[in-house]
Picture 1: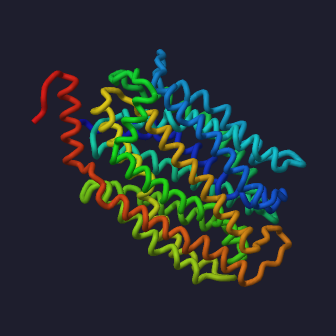
Picture 2: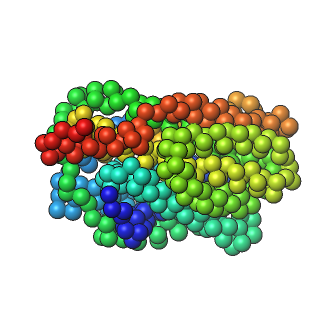
Picture 3: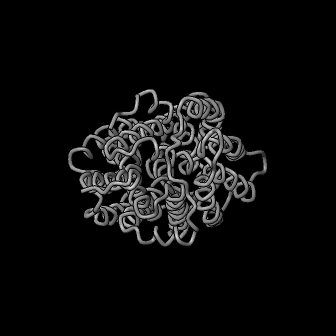
Length: 447
């Protein structure tokens, strides 16, 4: 199987840059900004995030269903990616640069708009990536390139926040979000335009005509998909607990909020550098074994954050480098494994239903992206933590900030690793599946 050109990988991956540039600050900076700076209560902010995810329960599967059945002269994926741009740009602008008096209602409305834009963009975009190549290892290369570009987007968010630190005398979450929001509004239309005009869509796919109920039954009987989805759901919940607490930990436990983008940049630089390693390792020991390795490493490293206290900001560096390295396997590996699972469904259904699978996957990503911050914020409220800028939190409250951030997520990572350990789709099994698919297309029987 011929490898894709590097230029094709580059242009396809470009769209993930502005997506990550906008999404990461939404889960890192927004919770603290709206609860601390704009005065939205912790429990109300957590409820808003949960309500937005409930909306996704309908929108994500619907988008997958529609994308798989779209037939146009521009393809079935690209039109929806273009349509998503104004929704994402409007959501980012209103959330990151809110007007005076913005509060809970503003947060709810524009988080819903941004979530809709994310749905319109990511489900067709990721399904498109799964269709660029049928090869087991080439798919790791595709998702690895996309993951690296996403890390570049997250790094740009940190660089923009660092710029805010130097531009403003007293930079905090508000100033960080303002600079990042403006950067995203400039970058997104350019990157999406290059992706949809420089990368073609395959016309060689099995059209989806299967009734929804029959398709869901087949999906429910897809054991590897259920195993992979369960592991992803649990691990991403752990990651989503950590993410909003990052700023709370640095601001209140270490006392260095203004330097938070610097540490996040260190984390993502290490993350970026690690992606090729995890892709390489997956070709040597298998995708699922490499995925387990990333879980084990981050679970072992994360509790060391508990050793840090006020004034220890720079001692956070080696821990962040190890956790960033481990997290390099989180995006490339499961997305590549997911493309293999779709081949199994195609073998059983006779159809290419990539977008339906990616819509369910998107939902699995968004649910913990809401549950995690909800657990984190409700946990802070439960233990009496006060996020107000002038609040005085004692040693007990700060202990629970550290515990929720450092130790609690490791339990999720260990559970996910145990689930993935005996994952059945290996490289040899995938080659058998591809031979059966080619045999079905040509009317021959493999083996």
